[in-house]
Image (tube, rainbow, N blue to C red):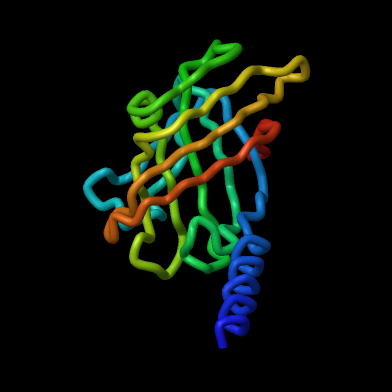
Length: 161
């Protein structure tokens, strides 16, 4: 019985780890600004990029079961920097002050927009105008207060509009 339980637990852990987050895209938008309804964070559809003085970065994923809602719904980590930077490091509350949010588009309790206040995002502009960005962020679910943790690194390309 104990051996069966060990095999089942091992198989469950293998399946959970193998269905990690699948990255869809890393993009950025120049002359933009993050906008959303801060009074109604459950309305993820209120999020948009409008004209502004910032470079807005978006990491989009299909969520693939990570960070734990076990859905295939799209999610985003988004933040912005004033135009003109060649490199940056954002840590902790600096992420939130630069518009850092996580958007979860699912039929789950924590759907909507969560402000990102913990972690580190580091980036530098590459020769061809793309950005190399590493992010390792944590935040609490808007409704459940579940701790979410996302790490991703990649080359951000200019978004096609």
